Amino acid sequence: MAYHSRGGNTRRLAEAIEAGAAEQGVQTHLVDVEQITDEDWGILARSDGIFFGSPTHIGGPSASFVAFAEQTSRFQPSAAWADKLAAGFTTSAAMEGGKLGALQFILALATQHGMIWVGQALRAGWNTSKGSSADLNRLGYRLGSVAQCNVDEKPTDMEESDLLTAAEHGRRMARMAQKLNGEAPVEEGAR
Image 1 (cartoon, rainbow, N blue to C red):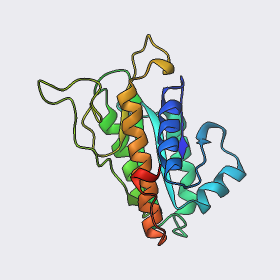
Image 2: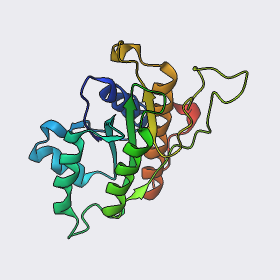
Image 3: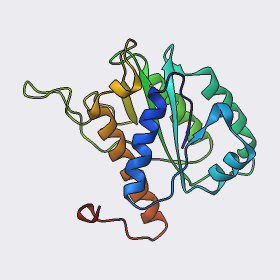
Image 4: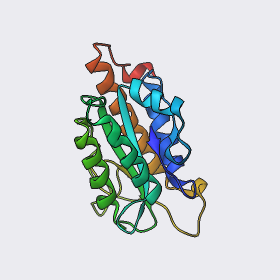
């Protein structure tokens, strides 16, 4: 997982995704792109899939994430990341707040590398009169995982439903990697 987090919200979402993937029995790594090392680049190179994450800033990803994306261009000529799985996640203070723009940037990055995109499979929640902010995928995104985080609250105050939604996305990515590798995914009751 390659991500940038300014205040901790995006890292918390990354940790939820990582926990969901780990439940499927896959090995995961959190790579902070602002402090990326040669060892981290090696981990990304060996990974079957990469979740990319950034806070949404002015309708797109953060400058630190964009700088990381530019550094990945060295892998394009050799198609080193082609056919890896890819997915995206982002956080912002507003309910929408430009999250789609950030996810589209991440999608473009993945497709520039020939990666295979894994979107969010959960249907939109909180879209009926009986729904609530506790619904999974309460913000209705299918392109990736998102979280809305109030500016006057800490990462520990994030909506549990956003974290559970992200964890399910992590499980889905892990299952897809297992299928591509000919492995049997962990059954839901076996967790």
